[in-house]
Image (cartoon, rainbow over all chains, first blue to last red):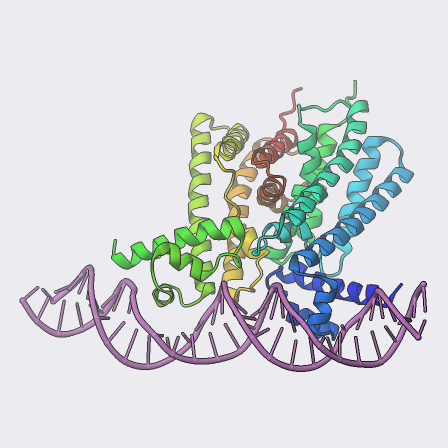
Length: 205
Length: 205
DNA sequence: TCAAAAACTTGACCATTGGTACAGTGAATT
DNA sequence: AATTCACTGTACCAATGGTCAAGTTTTTGA
């Protein structure tokens, strides 16, 4: 890796910690450059403004979260290849992973941007939307595989159901942060899992 | 009502619109005073700083939201006094109300403060926590009444289940805002309702 | 109706923040 | 050896959140 890329990564790491814990506005460029031991001009050499920083931060965040989710659900499929069981196992592994995070989930970049003060430009907002849509596709696929084998016991909009995991995670993060109870997030995911179990429960006849 | 209180209300109204749509940081005092046609000193006569503004905003928001929820669920109990049916009716009325909001839900003040840039003082954070806990109590009471009559088909933590409505609403607001789909919120509430229906479904034997 | 209190205005000032502009420099790459 | 990369340094700008002191008008209660 080149030297510039290393500095860029360092800046992103520092910025990410700040943004997720305090929000975008509270994370000043002055603060970032002080910690990174670089000058302001150096910072703007890498990111032409805060929009570009947000874009890079969001992209990186989305990629790493997607990788984590994929590895968890791949593992779940290894353990049981039935779509319903694998989904339920995946959700449990996911909840356990969230519970095991020592300081709780660091925060959701999507929600941080959503509630952020400075209005970002279209590029950032579009990417934010895309991240949610990617999660929708990711879970919709799994849900459809489940539904094909286990007909749901309620008429549900599959997109909305797929979105529910995003909603529960984001809502759970708000709960955890506001209540100061890191385990709150994992519990919410387990409740969502409980819903999935009911919705697709095999009919014993 | 005294004149000062009227001005204070006007300031709160303007600030609320700004904060819920753009976040705290993007809602500048200059902007608020311009719209209210008052001077900066006039503003600081009413609120000594942004913390006090946040406090007043959050308190008012929590009070009005609580009143809305209570009136919806009171109405639901009028329609059916069975705890389960009344809860399900209430959730449906709630979802419909959310769908009927012309511009979608204006946003959650709790989440806005949670993700807000400027770090608020302890008073604000404590009140934010209290608002979530009030919702917990409000729904826990209803859920316990349901559980007493209809034993749940899964071992669930009642506090977490009560918190789930907060999580789903906050998460749903994020979804609605990021996707630009105001109906997303109501759909999430309906999915939560679907879960409640499964969880407490009467056993037909 | 009159004095006191409430509800402001005027205006000066300050630190922080995001950002721009531009000239210059040492190290790495080609 | 030339060029590009990855910065530093300095100077500057507007907006924002706030503070302070002093003065003025408006309301209100006795």
